[in-house]
Amino acid sequence: MRLAIISDIHGNWDAFQAVLKNMDRAGVDAVVCLGDNIGYGPEPNEVIAALQQRNIPSVLGNHELAFLQPERLAWFNPTARQSLSLTFERLSEGSRSYISRMEAVLVDHGCRFVHGFPPDSVTTYYFELAEEATCKTFDTYAETYCFIGHSHDLVLLACRQGRLENRPLTEGLLELEPGNRHIVNAGSVGQPRDGDNRAKYLIWDSTGSVLEVRYVAYDIAAVARKIIDAGLPEIHAKRLW
Ligand SMILES: [Fe+2]
Image (cartoon, rainbow, N blue to C red):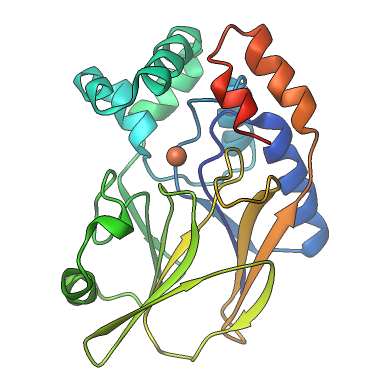
C-alpha cells in the first residue's frame, strides 16, 4: 500500500499541480491531506476543487478553522490575518460548503491524520510540548503512525524508553522499524519553511515500512506574481523563495 500524504497547500495551486503530477508518476494507491488548504496563496478555490475532484480526504487545518470560527483570526499575526480575511471574501460557495464539512481527525489505512498534534488538536504545534508530554501523547491513541502538518517542518518523532527522538527528515527514502510508533510531520506543499523552496510531500509504503520524502520544483515566480496581483500580502510571495 503506497499512501501519499500532503499538507499545508495554502492556496498554492501551481505547487499542488506539480505535486499531483509527481505523485501520478510515482504511483500511489491513496492520498490524504492534512489541512491548511487555504490562506497565504492566491488560488484556494482551485486547490479545494482539485481535492474534491480527486476525492482526496482532508482534515481541518487552523486556517480552515478560522473560517468556521472567525474569532480565531485574533490568533494569527497581522499579515496572516489580512491574507485570511481576503481569502475568506473570495471563497466560492462550493469552497465554503466544503470547509464546513471538514473534520479534525481522520483514521484510515491504519494511520491517524490530524493537522496539529495527536490525538485531535488542529492548533497545537509539535514543538510546544515538553519531551515527557510528547511521549505521553502516544498513550492517547492506538495507531502506529500519526501524520501531522501545521509547522511546515519535516520531522520524525518517536519515543524510546521515555526519551523523545526528534529527527529532521530530508529528501529520499527512510526505512522505519516495523511496529515502532511514530509521529511524522509532513512538511508543506505550498508554503515551505524548511530552507528549501520546493514543494514537499510524503509517500508511505506500508509494505516495506518505507517513508519517502519527495521535493518537487514548481514555478515559484508565477505564484509570487499571482499573490501580488491578487492584492494579498507581499511577504507571502517573498516567503516562497
Ligand atoms: Fe499551515
